[in-house]
Length: 101
Image (cartoon, rainbow, N blue to C red):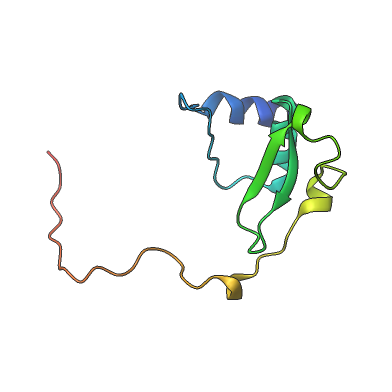
């Protein structure tokens, strides 16, 4: 699938909440960088665990963040050993599951 078609598909399936925050799961960092560029946002970094990517408006980036604003520059490999907890804690209560009719 051509890159422009992929970006259009992702964009069309994004439901933007009123507060302007977007969460997209399962996309590659390069794809997220390209989507950010279309929205005038620059990739400015990733957390040390390699889980979250951070974007800032292009207008706010001048001399404040490490260039270039690319996936190749800001990628952090997954460091699961830094995570102290993965997922929610196990339930201590037995649940009964029912099927909706």
